[in-house]
Length: 325
Image (cartoon, rainbow, N blue to C red; front, side, top):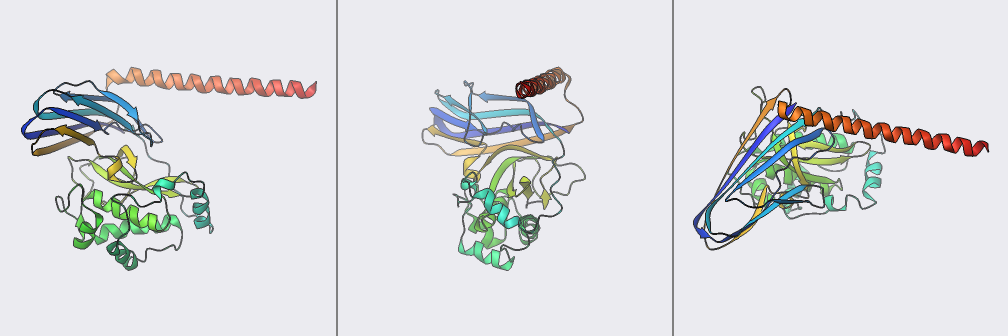
């Protein structure tokens, strides 16, 4: 399935400001079952756009506006293909916990095991874990799937019940929150059980027949947990879903602090009014203007693979000739 995404962000200031410096994490990732064909970003007032890759391979765009302004608008548009993800295993072997610990021992997932700014254990979290019997039992896969459902049942989805910088105790105490809260709670639980877990920022396509709790017209957040022998499995406790073809990933991190869609500072004294609008539209095929580019990319990839296979075959023939001499 192909998706067209339009992400509009508008900042309005109560008084003129003289400088803005901002980072954007709105560029969908290209990996596994997801491929970003096109990304365009426009800023008003106009500004030169630059980009880099952060330590988790998220694409980060950044810009500066030196002149005086009273509002700032960012429009990001993307076209992304998402195919069905690889099916996860029906079951895990009896030594799955040992296998998971073996994966974590080399330090590769160190950052996704430690407490982070928003995803850290608290007394209220430990009370919830006791209630849900969240301990090392069964196997990592079945436990993660169970807790994904239990969190969905335990909490109400309530927009504006928490803020973007709310600690997890706010949602834990009132038993309601938004996707960011549910993701942080689940990540903190997983890490408490020494299961690597990370935060995913992105979008969720809402079809007419989908019974999602999360809001249409906004960004979305979910969780990925490491499953031995499989890799990262996406779980969406807000909607009790396995992340699939409707989930579009823009960035991954330890928690929201690593991956906000916008992050910046300005020079001046003013209150800020922020408004965000997201539209995700599904389409059966690529727009014609991108089809030629996509075919060229696929042909190039096929030629690279063919050249690699020919080079490997030639090396094998040379080795056989040397062994016969």
